Image (cartoon, rainbow, N blue to C red; front, top):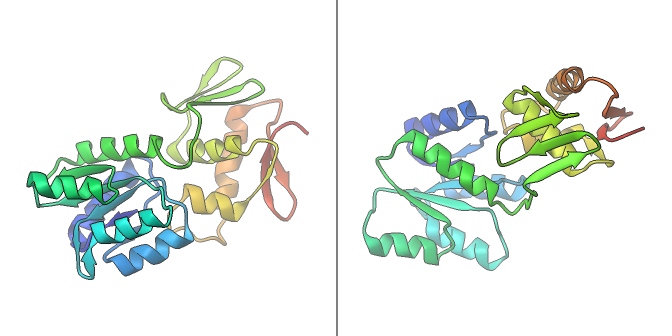
Length: 217
């Protein structure tokens, strides 16, 4: 989630993070961000400090008191030590001063996502399928697979729930952003490509009327 009231900067951030393989939602104020954050799990939140409806650190402090655990990266032009300390004291996990280099922000977001409250282990595996989350590598029977960012995200989500049926809507929510049409066939297209790359024996099975399940028959 990117929360930034400067529309041009927000669009640039969203574009940059999407090009790096993240599913990204954007908001221009705290109220909109709060609605989206309460409806969908996010692995990381990039928050401009000063927004039209308030200081974001007050919002984060309030949510932290209620048990919210998503990692937060504050963006701000305020570079005084006291401002940075306030950001951390109010529940921030990282602090980046404007202007900044996009590549640095992308790397910081990636690091925070790895530490997110989703609590993924560093290696996921099922039978002869192994996903090294730190290296972003997937192997089947020892053979390295070349996956797109979206294929990787869908496979990762299925692996975290191996053996359980996963709804298409859940895959849309966790692997795409708010622009995705829940009635489209984007999930089926990605799963079809994954099945082709994973080869036999088949690991991803359709669950009639629901979605997919990763595991043996």
